[in-house]
Every structure is written in C-alpha cells, then in structure tokens.
Amino acid sequence: MSVDASECAAGAAGSFEIVFLGLSEAAPDFEFREHFSWAPPVVKVNATFAFDEAMQRYGIDSVTACACRD
Image 1 (cartoon, rainbow, N blue to C red):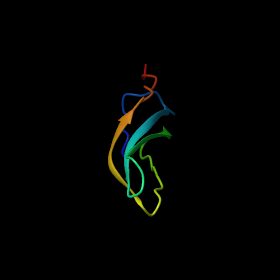
Image 2 (image 1 turned 90 degrees about the horizontal axis):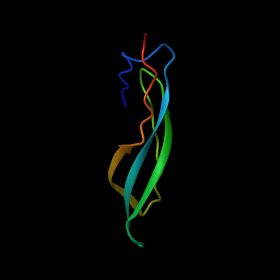
Image 3 (image 1 turned 180 degrees about the horizontal axis):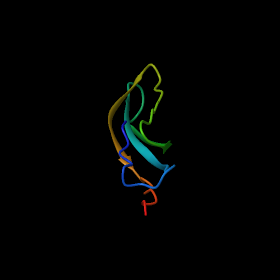
Image 4 (image 1 turned 60 degrees about the vertical axis):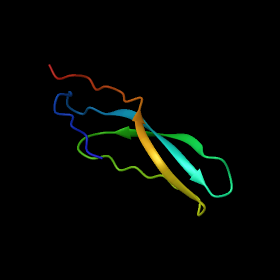
C-alpha cells in the first residue's frame, strides 16, 4: 500500500483500519477489522486466515488525517 503524504508535515504518520469480509467452509461469513499504522512512503499489512477461510472483500476505514505542512 502506498501512502501519498506530500501535503503532510515532516514525520507525519497516522492510523487506519482494514475491514475484511471472510468466508469459511464450516461457519457463517464473518467480518473483522485490523488496525494498522501508516507512515510514508510504504505501509506493509498482513492478515492471516485459517486453512478453511478465504477473504471475499476488504475496505479501508477510519483513516487518521496527518498534520498539514505550513
């Protein structure tokens, strides 16, 4: 995931959530959120699923805005 923080103050960072909709062979579909921190230029994220689960879709939510440059 790339972060464009060109309008942010130096040393800018923040947080965000990824909302996952997962599928399971032996249980109902499930939704969960993972909280991450961002800092330019790149953010690496990782989510682990069980052997009988798969991700159907995801979305980014609750992004913290950075402080603007002067």
